[in-house]
Length: 135
Image 1 (cartoon, rainbow, N blue to C red):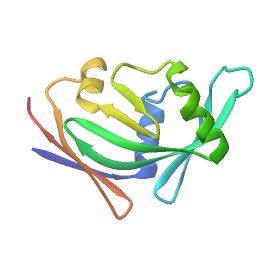
Image 2 (image 1 turned 135 degrees about the vertical axis):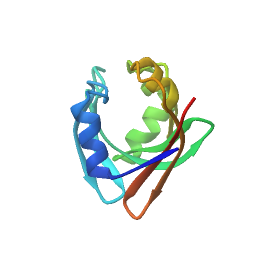
Image 3 (image 1 turned 90 degrees about the vertical axis):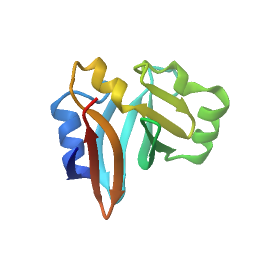
């Protein structure tokens, strides 16, 4: 078992450096406990949607985040029209607005990272701690 600890900023740098964020996520930045960004939707009336992501928990291999759309009326429209389903997202990501679930072990498998599994992810005091185990 190993533990890796890093901040939001370090996590964002890792994601950007390894091109792990979808191409439709633009201008990510850290503000407090959240990652703020813009989503390019390719929809005629909603080409760009400002949003933020907040870590909630880790359960059954899934990292759960809360997605917040900056504009509340836009948030209702996205929910009602199921607009997020039109985005090209990997199969290890599930969206049940406002929750986003990422199967991190499936992400590792699809990225050909072997010999390690994520056992738990903790978030406290602005730092993530990832606890790993051997498969």
